Image (cartoon, rainbow, N blue to C red; front, side):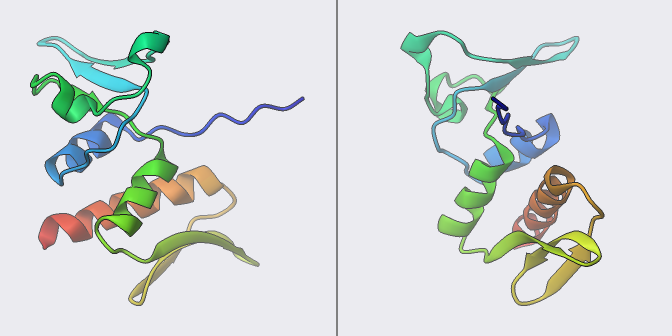
Length: 125
């Protein structure tokens, strides 16, 4: 049986989401130390999901949602109409009504590029 692993946001995307007010519960998180950025997979069932952006008060702990969850937050909280679609040119993302870009044959890459573009737009508002 094939399992599907959902793509998590990058560290940079996670920081940008936190700055924009992302406050949904996630399982995973990033923790920044003076020397490195560490991705932490939370496998402790007692700490399964929480809003890491607010739960610790530590600026160096950042929620790490999946790209799909981050895009859902952008749609539901920020009101951005967006998605990824496939055409004869490959996968493309769209942000209604203003922009469409083609990203070849990789859905995850197109979805992550969509999130980057939405974060750029929201940061300018």
